Image (cartoon, rainbow, N blue to C red):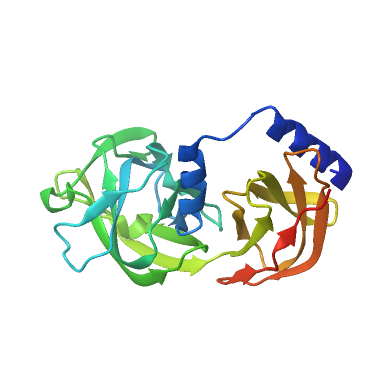
Length: 265
């Protein structure tokens, strides 16, 4: 999409809303102080027709207390997943949430009762041991920093996670390998006058990658791959001119701070 079109659409988008509420401004400002965590599920293949797990919740724990201190992630994609479809580097997004920065000690994957395996066309329920019915706890022990997007990959080993008993039952004892890594960087800055709500877009070539709005003048554009970007600023007040800032470099696991932009009439 051409830059001029982007700025025109941004202006129409902003001016269609007369003003932002204080609560929205506060929310946008707080967002700059958060980490972003994306949880993905993938699988090592197993010798079954299907292995379906019933995902109910994902929780994180910042403390060393593995009993208390748990909090659920927002935006968990609850539902049934056939993990055998998630092989050969395929994965699926289970959750995408903003978190407080800090050290994540553990994550807990909570499954519902509708887990099953299909063998030779026959669907067989998977029994979950009582010790795991409160959720499978996985050690992470890694820091997450404000303004950075992280990908947590849950690698489910189907062949080792299902145990067949002597009486023909199947027991689910999940074996999951975890890996947490930063997958993006961010750009932050300030726009003056801070009373003018301004759309800020990160652009590479003719493509708009993502965007945000200023809150009391400040902004942060998150989740950017490493590379060089142009920032386009589209003020809601039409008496101010749109402008660009070129050559903004972004590195993975880093926040790039740019010079203050001063809007001109």
